[in-house]
Length: 216
Image (cartoon, rainbow, N blue to C red):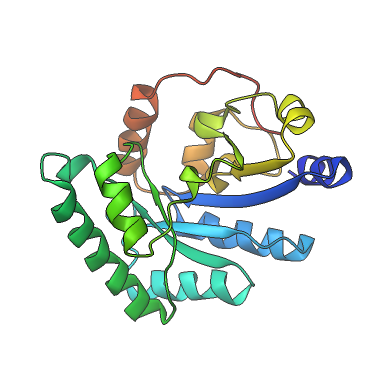
């Protein structure tokens, strides 16, 4: 990770770093501390309606505050899969309800949203944009690259050559001091067995990325 950031800085790229916190707030805090030591400021997107952690538990609220106190920003990460059958207006209302809860408990304004797994409809994006909840994936001036399933979607060095502005979505659960396969990364999060199996099922159901070299 240090090598990647150093390379992009030396290459002169403008980099927007974000983190979708899908599975573990504990790992997010450790990564936020690591980035703060490097002088990096990122946006951490908290999954507010996922099965893996409860962001509104008092202990987790303190972890979110810790991330903010380290100099990072907080956004909302939302899974549309359970409400995909309702219209865009209803989806927007539910998103704003979760947003209000996160703002209330973490004592900070939330201005950014990303989506977990499912791409939002054009109608929903328009509604959220009109209501000043910014969706960063729609910023076409930044080339988007992510490490989903422990694989980069594209070759980072090639992307850096051709795109001056880059948005990197880094998932903290894939990054450790020693190289591991993705199953070991999940066990390293120290979740319970049922959640481990649920995460494995979700990952295996996702299509493979085009660029298959694991992040280093």
